[in-house]
Structure formats: structure tokens, C-alpha cells
Image (cartoon, rainbow, N blue to C red; front, side, top):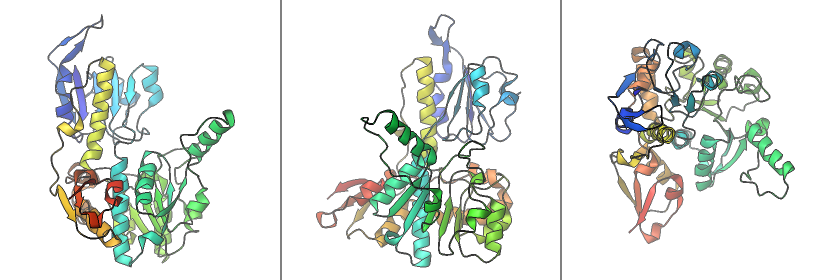
Amino acid sequence: MKIYFDENMPFAKEFFSEICHVHIGNDGSIDGEQGELIPFSGRTLTAEQVADADVLLVRSITQVNEQLLHLNDKISFVGSATIGTDHIDLSYLAKRNISFHSAPGCNAISVAEYVLSALVVLAERYLLNLSSLTVGIVGGGNTGTRLSEKLTALGITHKICDPLLERQQTQKHVEDKTCKLTDTRNYVSLTEVLACDVISLHVPKIVGGDHPTDKLINADNLALLREDQILISACRGDVIDNHALLALKESGHALKVVLDVWQGEPEVLEALIPYTEIATAHIAGYSLEGKARGSEMLYQALCQQLEITPKYQLKNFLPPASIPRVEINQDFSQILLSQLVKMVYDVRRDDAIFRQQLSVQGFDSLRKNYPVRREFSAVTVTSSAKTLSDVPHHLGFNKTFN
């Protein structure tokens, strides 16, 4: 079996090195064969390269469609180690009876921690009291939910806008009023979210339909924003009209902007960068755990398709954190929150790399050579009875008591 995988998938060799030697006979029998595990560059992959692939494992920069697969008559499995699927021609794969799996939620925690790091940095920079802010989350899926959980742990008021989930919630209630809803959140309108102190975007790119997200944040609604607000985008670049945002900032508007994603990636509207508080190269979800969960989820899906028992889990491969343990000897506060968050991940590192190296390395190279970053779960927080607090645990840190 030939398995082609994006070279930026962590632990792909560890997960798939044995499974590539599996051969499925015409009668369904499983035996060994001389397989190959072949890495590729996601942005430049060609049809000729994957003409003999049995399995193709990609990330979001690779367009998987007829143009890529028309020379291949044997592929049976395509996997994307990412949340979104806008880079996949799902109808084409279905027409050819090619199994497809993605990794929904794999980097949701990573993105939520990116947002939290940005918030503590801006709170320090502008002397903001985080507990007094309201946060509007656009998108209530995996990432929006993880962010909501962390904000809840900190006692930060937040609202969620997601018309698709709101409609599903309403339909379930209408169809069976006795049914106990699994999603009991109170959704609000986009207008209400856009009035919050912080607006954080976590939606896929959707073109057309009842609720498109392409240029969801445009000149019209940008004009409604106050000068003391914070706008954070860590989803898809096309959700914000970058030229409209640049025009707003060039007019002197004081909106604070955090951009991890950019319209037209890998090309970036460089004139917009100086007007941002934090600018990064689409790496919000690039924690080691976030990327590696995508590899693990595709490994599990392929094992299921091959009807073999998974042998590995992510914990088999994750190294210890550089600072695996920290002890708290004070009551939990915003200062302590800032210290804990930045100890694990200080977003200013990635902002500095982006500003200094974008023109030298290019957007894709910054992503490919992204330095290792861990999630809160890699660190254990210990505390005494006097400083007993569940906040670090609810934020995602491991916790023990002295």
C-alpha cells in the first residue's frame, strides 16, 4: 500500500509506518506487503505525484479534486488532518466511491488558547480588566465551544452567534418538544455579537446559501464597530474583507485587530500588517497536540476502514513539555492567568516572527518551519490548599495538590 502524506503532519511516520505494509486481498483477507510511506509538499502536489497512491493524507493547503486525482484509478481513502473541508471536492470523491475523513475539532483547543493568549497580551498592553469584557463568538462549532469553555472558566461573559446551529436546535424542538436538547445554548444575532467588546471569528468558509461566511465581516458591518473593540480572526482568511478592514484602519479607526488568517493566502495584504496588534501566519491551530490529533484521527479512520485494531495513540509519541510542572503559591488572578498562559504560549513570539520573516521566508515557509508549541494540557499545575482553585484545571492545565 502506498500512503502519501503531507510533510507537515506530525507523527505521520510513527502512526502509519506499519499500516502502509497492510494489503487487502480481493477476498477481504489481510496480509503483509512491501508498502511505502511517501511525504509531499502540500502546496505543490501534482496529479503525477499521486497517480499510484492508495491513500492520500493532506492538510488545508492542498486542493483535492478531479484535477489532482484524474490519473489515479486505485485510491480508496483520502484524509484531511484539518477541521475544514473547503479544499476537498466531496462530490467528486463520493462519485468515485473514495472514502473521505477529516479531523473535526483536532486543533480547536489550540485555536482557543491562541485567542486567550492574544487577550492576555492585549489586556496587559491596554490595562484591560478581562472579567469586565464581553466576548462575542461567531461560530459555535468545535473551536467556538472550546473558547466558550475557557471563557466560562474565567467568568468572562460571552455570547455566541451561529444561525446554522440555532436552526438545528429549533428544528429538533419543533419536531419533538419532549426531546431533551443536547445543545441548550442561547444563540444571538450577528448584530448582537458585533456589539461585544471582543469579537472572535470561528467559522468555516461558506460561499452562497442562506448563511454565507465569505466576507462576512465587510465594509458595512465594519463601519458599525466601536473604536474600543477588539476583532480577532483565527478561522479562514476570506471571512474578513481585508481591503475593507485596511480602509477602515487607514481612516484612523482605533479598532484593535488580531489576524491569524488572511484573504488570498499564501499572499498577504502586507499594507494591513502595521495596523494589526497581533499578526501571525495561520498558525493558531498549530500546537503540536493540535496538528498531531489530526494525524491520530486519520490513523484511527484508516484502521477502521481496513478493519484492523489501532495500535497507537497520540500519548505514545508526545514528548514532555519544556516546563512540565509549575507550582502556584498565590490566589488565582488576572496576573497569574497571564503568567500561566504566556509560560506555555506567548503569541508575541509568533507575531514577531511574522513581522520579521514574512518577506524573507514567505507565508508557507513560516508555517512549515513553525517552532514547537504546546497546549496547556502539557503542563501540570500544583497548588496548596490555601491556593486551591479549579480555574487552571478548567482552562486545560493538568492539576495536582500538594
